[in-house]
Length: 82
Image (cartoon, rainbow, N blue to C red):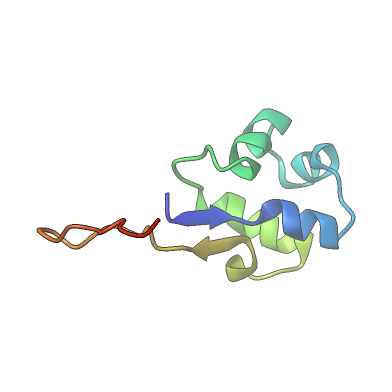
């Protein structure tokens, strides 16, 4: 998925553990783990807001777009020389 959650980076910068963060934002440690480990399909704005409040950051500090590298439709990728 091209959206990457950099929650672990912000947690490390703030020296905050998962249990403490989950408690402060009001979600279960299991749900925080799903988000932290790139398994979430969506995130509620209210959760994102709480993450930003507690971690003192912006949404862009937590979420990153990394486009997937896909060949254009109808074009082949050459692997010659590899």
